[in-house]
Image 1 (tube, rainbow, N blue to C red):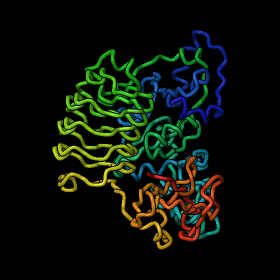
Image 2: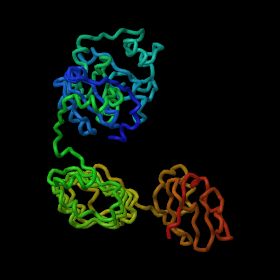
Image 3: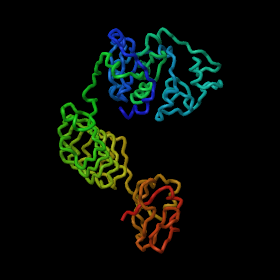
Image 4: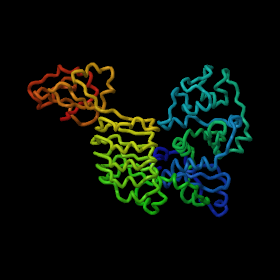
Length: 448
């Protein structure tokens, strides 16, 4: 969570004077319902539960989700509308939250309010939706129809997390500082927003508030690395070993017999041991962007597997036939691999809904100009030229340090970089065979 909150450490700081015994006793009471940002431990967010006055550590989105679930108070749509809406401008500080019409209300919030996300002034009365809300006017009624609020209700619910019982449990938070409600579209966005609304607090003052731990079901706790996970292997369900520079899968992984999710992306794995078949409770297996050249037949023993990520393993040329045993599989990604043909029957797996597969397609390189209107079709694919005079060529995204040209067997340089032959190339240059504009936005690499 340190990275998540790195951008909000400059947020509101709440300076508490040194507390004596009497002050310490009342601090938890005084801060009921507030989210607190631990300023001496950047990124740590706490919630002071208004029900018991104790602080709960919100470690990550899993903890946030459980907090909402365990301490959220159900509310009807009618009662929710009686509480004024908090500043939509806060959402502008987070680039991942979309505000299509730039009116200060993000799209997800507008969906809840019933305003038009594509129109800054829904009722076309000359005042933007957010400006109307700030003035307690109704953005859905032209002429600034007044919104009716129940201040007693808003005051009573200050600091509470609210769940819309008539709208799939959508989550809101009533900020005790202003008595307004803030929409939390999901745990990640909500946690960032709550971090922005939080009051800064020193470690000394935080320690004056009694602490209580949220109960998190073991199957929802993520482990990031082996050290902590190996302390109690039987209680490890979610294991993240992404980007750990592994060249071989650590044998210790096989101790986690209850694993349901295993993330091994962005390592240097060339093989997967056959023992992987012993992890029979796996539902998600991410092996993307490694250096795999094959998969063991034992992969077919993972009969509960629902999600298999293999994208980016460019040396992977085939799948074992045992893949057909994965009857629960609903997601399979094979993009940017060398697989040209799927085992017979893969597409007929009963629950397979998403299959990402773009096998190399033979094409005459001289036909590239004809694909000018469909450039995206070129990206990341290998083209076997029908003319025997050409080698294979791959068209990739810009930004990689690779040549812009390829050589024909007769020694001619075929340029795909705007017509400029590279220094030191063959003296016989012929760039006219290919329309340079077609590949001007892409880089072409020799594949012998």
